[in-house]
Each structure stands twice: as C-alpha cells, then as structure tokens.
Length: 405
Image (cartoon, rainbow, N blue to C red; front, top):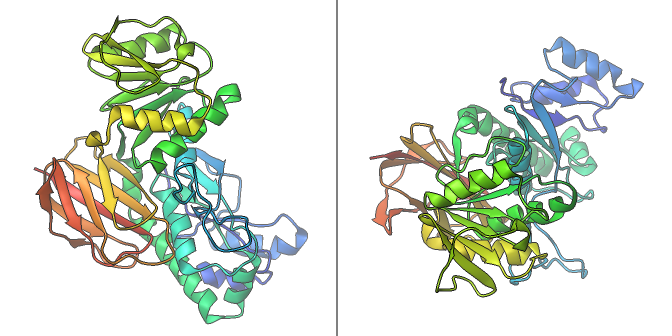
C-alpha cells in the first residue's frame, strides 16, 4: 500500500503558490475545499502529482478527538480528571485499532481530528496529534486552524516553527512506514462487534485499558478470531456469543488463557474455584485456564476496564514508563519476533528530562528514535524480566527498537 500522508488544505490559503509550503514534504494527499475558488489550487496540485480525491483504495477515515490532556470547563487551565483523579486524556489509538480489527482486509486509517477552537497551536500539540495516530498504525489528517494557517502565510515565527515541527513529524513517520506492518502485541483482547448497543461500553473499555497502561487488542466478531500471545480475553457484549465465537474463546481458555465476562455470557463452563480473584466476580477453572464472571452485569466501562487490568495483573505488562505524567504506549514486533518496537506517547506540552522506560523480554541491543534527533544506540539494564532504559530529554514521542537475544 502506498505511503500516504494526508493534509487538509486550509481555507485561508487561496493562492496556488502556497503549494510551495508542501514541496519537499511527505504530504501527498490534499483535502481541498470543493468551492470554485479552490479550483486553481486543485489544478495546480494535480500538476504537481498530488492527489486530491477520491480516497485511495484501502483508506478509512476515522472521526477522532484532538489528542492530549482534556482541559476542565471551570474557567481555568486545570486538567479534567477521570474517576481516579488522573488527568483525562483524549487519544485516537483505540479508534484506529477498532477500525482495523473490523475490516476483513488491510486498511489504512486516517484520523480526522482537527484542532478545537482557534487558539494558537504549539509545536508540541501538532507533534502529538501526528504521533498519536501513527503509533497506533494510522495517520492523522494534518489540519491547521485558521490562526495557524494565517500565521504560516504571514511568516509569523511561532507559526512557522509549529509548521516546521508538523513537517518533521510527518517525515519521521513516513520514513518509518515499515513499523505499520509489524504485529501488535497485547495482553488483553476485547471481543465485540463494537457497534449498536455494545458500542458505547466496549469502545470506551478499550480506551480505558490503554489509559491504565495495559496493552489491548480489539477483536471484532466479524473477523477471524486471533488470540495469539494474549493473556486474557474480555467479552462484555450484551448478548451471549455465537457458537463459533464461544468455541474459539473456550479453546483459548482451555490452553491456559483467562476469560473475563459478565452474566450475559450465559451458562459458565468449568469448575468453581475456591479462591476469588476479584471481589464481585465468580472464578472457574476450565482446562489449563480460568473464567472470571462478574456476579452482576457491569455497565460502567471504567469499572470493567479496571477489573480486567487487575485480574490480568501488571506483572505481565509489555512496557512501562516512569516520570512522564500521563502517557500511553504501543508494543509491536516483527512476525519472526527478532525485533520489538515500543512506542511511547507523552501527553505534555513540556519535554521531560528524567524518564525511564522498561520493555519486557531479553534483548542484545536497543536503538532510540525521536522525531527531533537521529536514531542512536542506548544502554540497557536487565531488570524484572525485561530491560530498563534511562532516556535523555524527550518530548511528546519516543520509540525504542530492540533486537532479541
């Protein structure tokens, strides 16, 4: 699939000469207004070999949210908080994951999440928006609000710096396009159709599992069910699974996996266990694995996601990060398992100077990637079934590529 990098052409830019701004950048698909006033720009873009429509084959547009820490509505700049008191983070990775899982063929997801309002956008915010989609295997449709578009057109230094960072981030991920084909690693798989009466709960559960620093995989019931390398499967749809889905999940449990579910699962297979893994759940042994069933139907996605993370345990985490504040991570690997990639998103406008990352597994070498600097080897310390890496000053995104022993 071609390495597409989309951008939404600002309405502020009415002069075809503005196309020079994207010369020598990776942006190769332009969303341009349909009005007659934009006809010269569409023609000029076509003459430069740029595509303006229709959508390329295999591309899906996902409606998203401007990523970052959500600001409260009480009139100040404080962060909105979730049930734990932690800052509430808007991210689009789970949306990309669901879209990819629900397709019977490989898709390229473009996240449509323009900036909110018309406040001045900083370089860090744009860098985060691009990285937030790319780390999950998608692309953000780069969008400038009116203030930023006008500032770039007027050669405002602050606006030009933000634009420069947008180009740098898009260029970075275009060069690392092969990472999009690596196999996603996860500990918890959420099985659902992610639609209708099930959609609100299961979609938010994915979001919140990621916020709890665990790694998830969306598994759509319409596709082939793949539980490879998972520790647990969560089934929380409001109806019992179809026989084929039920059999696939139980085969996974029989081989040593864990099923976390609700009374809507129906009759529970297995033998009651004498221990309670989580208050409010009944525990059963089935084959080499176990089934954890909530005593009552769980309607709150926060509770369900938190229960799943606790039942599985953080001892099986694939990656962790300290001293960064709100963050998220994605782990993937080459199909042969020889190389692992851990990508970290830091939801802060400020760079961090004392962050530490940990990745599960045994490795012989590690290479650090940031948007601002060239890839370079980094030292590792073997610790707790993985390797610990003390990071230099990093901003909103850092990736570590590791070679297995």
